[in-house]
Image (cartoon, rainbow, N blue to C red; front, side, top):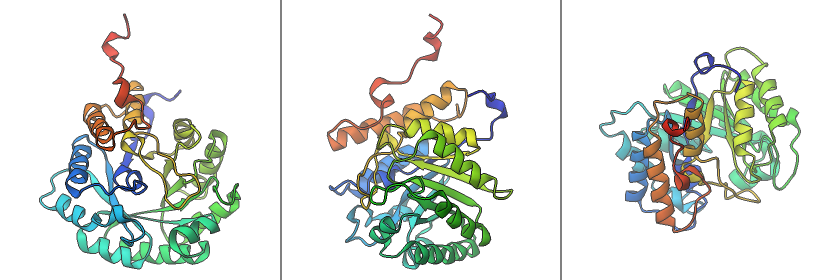
Length: 311
């Protein structure tokens, strides 16, 4: 990056592994193991941690204990980490409000096919209902982030017209919702597209806060993150150990690994307040638990020892 570290806006790290990382896993992880990972992530100094999603347990059994996890993590909470939860409809919002969600993440897909597979609704109906739910959450005094899923392409439909993405963003802005994430659900994004689309969003009006969410399906996740950063994005959604994948997209693949992203940030002199060793420990425990090699890199290699670089 060409901009000095002290001139950049504060980068926010939003850990989505406990939700996006685990939802695709067929074997349900016991709540005690999830809680241990979540507490390790809290101790690492992450800004926002997505505990889970409020979906029907028959559709995504992995998320059946989300309500109880929120109750456990909010009881006597002293950490500054914001605990977020994903909701797809009004029922999910009700559950989230009841168990202590601090930040609601809601989204509509720019892909009609993905929208119907994911929510049972088309894009237009989903957008309308998401906006209504988001307004309810705001009225309840909660932080809210709205997203456009499949913003950079769809495994079923292919290329998604950028104007379709921008129309959903316009609907959010008209509703007074300015914390907006663009999600690369299918992993089709490429750097020039990322910079162009985020640039268009951030130029719509002042006061927009943008977040990005990239899957590493074709190996471009980290490159896309830095393209988003160049465009002015300051909030980044990543997953410990690179876990992840939407079960309702054509090719499910993991996210950029949180520990990999923190490692490169710290090499740039950014977010040195984060406990990288704690993140690596969580990723290594996940690899041990699942009994396979994860998509992340730094948990295997260990971080570069900066004190040795001059040798």
